[in-house]
Picture (tube, helix red, strand yellow):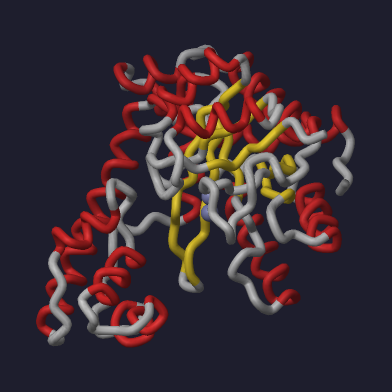
Length: 331
Ligand SMILES: [Zn+2]
Ligand SMILES: [Zn+2]
């Protein structure tokens, strides 16, 4: 039976359930460990940890940082087996991402007004309903105002990358996100590496280049077990994980009870994945003079050197875990 889910969202980003509700759902399903990985925010973590203590299950504090590459978006998960999720610099970066999204939504609204398809920023905010504001909310506002018939049309006519109302936002590269997570004492993991990639052969070639670059930025893991990944895809990803000294990870990418999304715990994640991640985190912290990242990064200017060591040491850390655990097989 599956006991682990290392990829879940709550209402702190775009999930439907509160952090406490997600934890309760996990406990009722018999899960032992879940990671809360909301997009660009750790706002749901404290509530999830409190609920985990009540239900007697483990919550690993996490985050999923959305980053940009020329071909689209790349998501980097961060797992914190310590209090690094409260890191001051990480918090500042996440707030900057959020502010960037608000500025960008305002810019798109202004452009739409000029283009004769007026909507209000306030309405976009209401539609987002506390979620991290994105183009989908602008699209819904356009549909609601009758300027387009569908969300798809909203993107096609106005707000896709080459649309007349498209606006850029504060952008982070995948390597930036890896470094930010690693500096805060977290383990960066490349999320759903094949999602959105159409041509299989080119996708794997691109992925190899990406993994090569991200290894230098401190990448520790690769999400192998994911909704829709076939056995063949998982085999390919496991081979890449071995080649690049990355720990296989996985989860359902749960967003709450939605008909088109996977349920919590519905993706099998081998226990050894979690064990290896835990060992990788432990290896770093037992070798680091600073065990408490939260206090060190918030008030110690010399923290930069220890953070650099963390980034440089991640490959070795992962290699140690690989040799100790052997390889992980697809279920
Ligand atoms: Zn994602
Ligand atoms: Zn996700």
